[in-house]
Amino acid sequence: MHKVTIKIATIVVATSLLYACGGNEEVIIEEEVITEEEVTMEESDDMTYILPSPLQIAELFKSAGLTYIGDLTNSIDKVDNYNSKYDQKLNYGVYASNMAYCIMNNQTQESINYLATLKKLSEKLWMTDVMGSMGLTERLEANVGNEDSLTYIMADLQMQMDDYLDENGMGYTGSIIFAGAWIETMYIAAKVNEAEANPKLISRLSEQAVVLESLVASIKQNDDDNEFAELIVDLEGINKHFDGFDSDSDEDFTLSSEAVKSLSDDLTTLRTKIVGE
Image 1 (cartoon, helix red, strand yellow):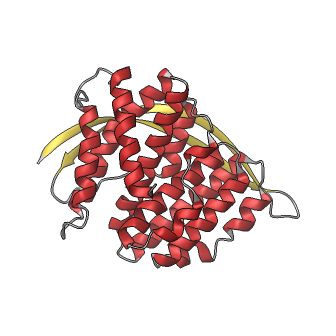
Image 2 (cartoon, rainbow, N blue to C red; image 1 turned 180 degrees about the vertical axis):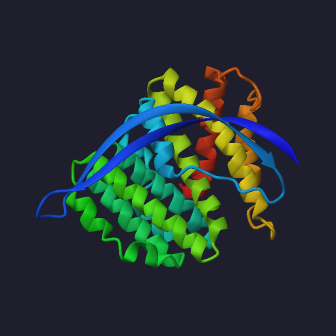
Image 3 (cartoon, rainbow, N blue to C red; image 1 turned 90 degrees about the horizontal axis):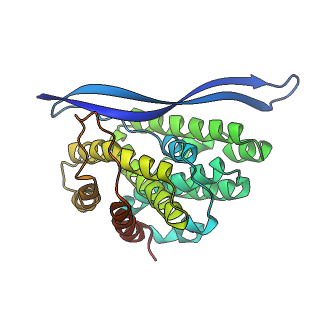
């Protein structure tokens, strides 16, 4: 057992949820503050790895200037191509990332389309109950143009899914879903940066080194049957781009322009492997 100290850039959101008199309209008041904290953990074989949600990752990148490019997201028409549980879990994460990206950029109709796609995948993954009682489509449609409310709805969905997986002994599934979401968000951020180089986006891409370490460790911890060996190899390949990262260093780690380009190329290759051509 040994101790590991990591720096995590997080978004702290103070939220007040109000309901208009005589109706059910949601009004969200939020204040967003980006903070950096150091977390020291004792690493052991039974350690629990806490991963952020796709929404939190999207928020971090948006705060760094992630703009909307519509054709970057995965087509909803591909959903019926994902037949294995492995592909369904990864692409549930991909579509969750796409939905978060659309919500962050006020693309409400696209968000609703991705929600319908997530419902279809949830049925294949036996997670129908997560969506069944939340009235998500109606809530999205009722809050068209209200980014804060849409963000709250996405956070609610994530919370419900996490609870469902834990209660049904499927917690390990969350790591695979998050892997799909993380890869998709990193791919989108890298492509947006290619379109117009942004030092803040590069900084956020660099910071994901610590998230990737936890993600790989979490998947390894739950892979008793070597079901995810290929994914682990692929993620460790991406992790090589962060070889200069030192979790114990006080120096900020930032990828060079050449490293960002190489990372983007490998993310594109891995993302294509997951979503298909």
